[in-house]
Length: 287
Ligand SMILES: Cc1cc2nc3c(=O)[nH]c(=O)nc-3n(C[C@H](O)[C@H](O)[C@H](O)COP(=O)(O)OP(=O)(O)OC[C@H]3O[C@@H](n4cnc5c(N)ncnc54)[C@H](O)[C@@H]3O)c2cc1C
Image (cartoon, rainbow, N blue to C red):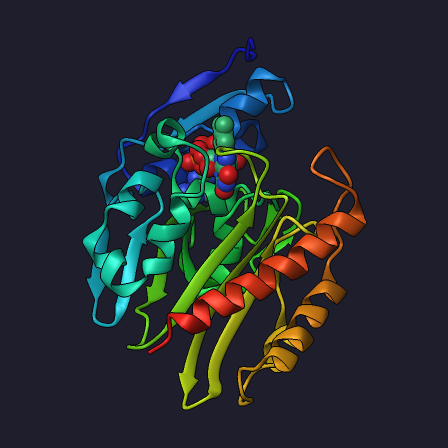
């Protein structure tokens, strides 16, 4: 319950935050919504000597459109994803899935950028960001770079983010007309992390699958894109046999950790079930 002592900093710009990260080095941590970092500090799993609060940086907040791209500030809180008219129209999967993250209080603080930067395989945004083909804008001392969500997650709590970088924006191509999507999350209770989850984005051309993205939550050390599962469906008819082939291919890449949510066999079977449900729901939403 009692976190260790730390120095507190509250920069007003990303440039100032980056400078502080450079100056303070690995003794410093960025503080976003604080709903993963503070729990870890209270249990003394993390003991940073400096917290750099990025809540007072206006440029990191808000959702806007740039042509066909939806740009989400990294400090946008989950509840603002749910109520965003832009996301409801252009990337409805994020609105729907954010309702399955944590609870109302946590969603008033927890940010999309923090959920992604944390690199927890139990978090929901990593798999979601992969299926929506998101990219992340990271600012460091040498300027900005943009990296794809697919490939960003390196290991448990490890991502492509460097110690001296701030995630600034999440950029998402607007869904093409007719796109279907779904997020199926098995959990023990509201506000719990997934036992297994699956995100799907899919488009059709006649009875054939013309585009498909499938990603899995909490069944491996990182969120996983299920590329072989996608290949089982792409340019093929959407039927029970091909869906089963996708399910089997997704099951084959699962590598879950055994814990109180279940053993490896159960979590793997549930990942398959979530894939089947998410595919069927997303397909039924295609136009
Ligand atoms: C009771 C409870 C239930 C929860 N359930 C779920 C759930 O079901 N699904 C889910 O996905 N999450 C869940 N969470 C986690 C919650 O969504 C967190 O808010 C989220 O994981 C981290 O976001 P944050 O903004 O709070 O980041 P923080 O806790 O402030 O930071 C997390 C990490 O990310 C780094 N970081 C944050 N922002 C940036 C940035 N812009 N650039 C670079 N690094 C950054 C920080 O330095 C820190 O290392 C739950 C949390 C609680 C307390």
